[in-house]
Length: 463
Ligand code: FES
Ligand SMILES: [Fe+2]
Image (cartoon, rainbow, N blue to C red; front, side):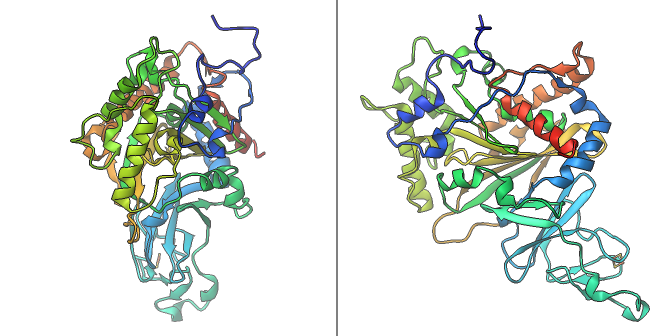
């Protein structure tokens, strides 16, 4: 029975905490992974209308999306002068272009003549100059109107004042963000603890190896929430086995940033009996080895006496990564090398900074359909020493009913993403048929969901 006397939010899963587990690792974690920040934030239900109502979605488009820093692309989408990329959100479209000085500019993606969209939604490519396909008004890479065909007919147009309209654009750690609000705080401030934490995590150049763009059958917030908590793992991904429970830590750092962390390769706190380290290694090997370059044919490594499966596995992973990519990863902590560590930046940027689990998610609402959203999944790998990062690949596009297993590169995560997608469809249906009017949340494990709604509500009330 739950202890109803304890102050709300103070209860934790029995057994060792994430923090306790990682302090036992032989390569110690950085301070950023030892911080804990949780405050009880209420236990009222979250109204289903936040997900289902078109009016609510329109309020988000009017008051929230224009005010926030949102992840538009990665620097490797536009490595060279003239490379461009289009980021779309709602009925806004942003043209991002790298100029000759190496900076990334962001412009409203519409011509200053009769507003023709300059580059197709979701496209990437290369240009020497941005030429409108309609009448050929041409802008340089800094957005200046460089050529106005038949300018004799436009004596009333101030050519110098007719450049493309700029949108705020700032880069953190290779990620290019845009903000439609000219008064927005600098990205660095918006990101709260993120820059400081990431300075303590592996710092190597990265490149994108895989980009999936998938339509999901749920509201953008409901879809994100499926990835913000690990409470669902035992039922959704492991058939309800209690030994798959995770001793996860959940943190909320400020207005925009939250985090979960859980161990890979440590025994579940509820496991009875506690499996041997060799059994844990076998599991690790079965579930995780495809993160290790060249491990397909290898036998399960032996865990020596007095060592742990996660330390042995992490040492092997770091050695293989060092050999494969030519960087020295030997000092990376066991936790940062192999654990599932996920940072979320409101409204929709997810980043796992680990060495093996180095992925990012992005979710975007669909205009006129609150019951669906667009999900981008990115896999990263270290850029091998001695060369510059490969240009980001084109997205592989998956429709609403397509399975992630159609893309072999997704690997063992494909089944997991499909299981999550199944839940989302059922949840969207449930919002409409429920006898309740709102979602009930766990105080600790679902705190990041509550935080998402609280931050969203602050933007919607113009706070
Ligand atoms: S609309 Fe762009 S040149 Fe006419
Ligand atoms: Fe999941």
